[in-house]
Amino acid sequence: MRYKMSSKRAYRSVHDLPNSPSVPRSSPVVFSPHWWQGCLGQVWDQELQAIQHHQAQLAAQATALGPPRERADRDFRKQTIMTMRTLLLENALTSFRAVLSGLLTMKMSLDCLLKILFERSGARVVTDSQVIYWVNTTGLSGPYHRLLVEIVAGLCALGLRHQGKPIQVRLKATPP
Image (cartoon, rainbow, N blue to C red; front, side):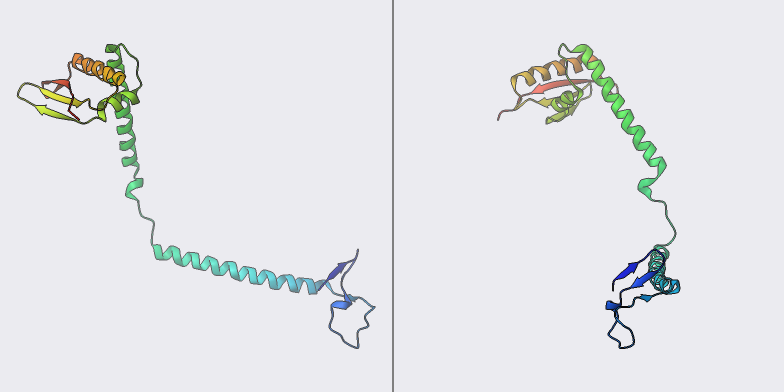
C-alpha cells in the first residue's frame, strides 16, 4: 500500500483498497491517529517479545554455566612471577653481553651472540676439577668461525664457575 502525507493528515490511496462499490475511487480515505498507533504498537510488541525471548535464552545459558570460577592461567600471582622471570632473564642476558663485549674486539648484537653460541650442537663434560663445554663448529663460515673463536676466548677469560669448578669452553670441529 502507498501512503500519502499532507500537511495535516495522513491519507492512504484509494487505489490500494479492494474494489468495493461503496467507496468511490476519486475520494481519499482519511485515517485517524489511533490507526497509526495500533500499527506501531503491534510492531513494537513483536520486537519486545523477540528481545525478551533472546534475553531469556542468554539467562538460561548463563545459569547453565554456573558461577564464575578463577582461571588458573589468569592468576595474578602466576602472571607476576612469569613477568619477573622474563625480566630477570632479559637483564641477565643483557649483563652477560655487556661483560662479554668488554672482552671482545668486534661488536655484535645479542641475537647474533645467542645464535652463534647457543644454537650450535655440542657436549658437556664434567670432571672432578672442571666443567668443559665443547661447541661444534661444523658448517660455520669463516667470519662466523672467527667470531665464535673470539667469543670462546672471552668466555674463558671471564673465569666462570659452576659449583666451585671452573668452566672451560672449547671448539670442536667434527668431520662432515
